[in-house]
Image (tube, rainbow, N blue to C red):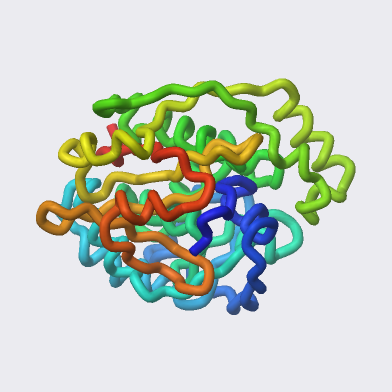
Length: 298
């Protein structure tokens, strides 16, 4: 599993740094990505900004049929189970050359798995799904490498501002730490895109002197917090790796008294890890988990 794959660069660029895995080839674009009725996409200024992998629209329809009438948390859990067995694709957002809005429900890395599920939960059409994915993935919805939400902390903040994740949840035995977010600019050689001076300067400027406050559940406190966690909650692995906030993410699913983790893992694809506490304890450099909860868009 991608225990050490840092959750930055859209959770794709850094995966190749710590987990050596060859990315699969890009499938063809679905030419009929806009859902009927002559709908005009709000996703981008032109269709050239969008790349839809073949099979994505049909999987969207099948998945959406499973979650009609379900509240957000239940819908997230149902979708996570639906996609179990889907293959893993590392660095998926960096396969196209220039930045485009990539939509792919056929293969995932850990971040895009959760991101697209969250977009589906509140979408009422494929066009709406694409638009919500864009809003989650990019700062102010502006498609670009430097405007991509490269860190989980920023991604969550954006999702909270959009009303799709609850604001500032507080869990029993929660801890707080202050840490820098500068892994990308500190490891330029590990990011092909950052070999371009303009992109590197942009990322370095955003990370210069930046520190954040992170709220997380320490490993030792997880057992006590389990009763307050529920199916559909999003987890991210808080890590001690310098310059990073988290290293992996997925969806929690409850089965009776047991809480499991469903996530996209290198070499395994989307899988279910039995017992979240046992799984998290096995992750190298993990110090705990950040937990956030989906909610209905207000």
